[in-house]
Length: 165
Image (tube, rainbow, N blue to C red):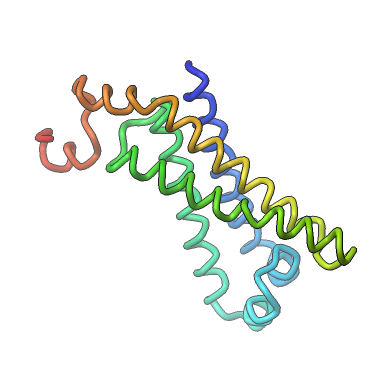
């Protein structure tokens, strides 16, 4: 496997890990919502037995899982997904933009010690790493991603249409 494929597999595994973490938050309940920064309102709703926090968090779980599947498809580990190259670029960009809060957060912590929990810096750093993995892997595999389609690998949308691209 190429370096780009390895980067996409790593990014995909991290995305699937984030999905699993979100599923764990639903199971753990209100304290997990507070710890991971969902806010007191979400924690209070979870404590009151409202289904809203679980539904929102499970929706996020599904999004992160799909993002992980896109990376694995880009690495050639899964069947090609619709709009694969576009999806990988958008996912990588979203993670990278989230990660770019890191310098601002570091500045804030340096100027006002204790202003942010350490986990907030970790979340930003992980997001930045994930975004760079997606973007670097996609860039390195760009031609391969296109060549796979040209070589007859059918996309999910083609499978739904009975094999027509």
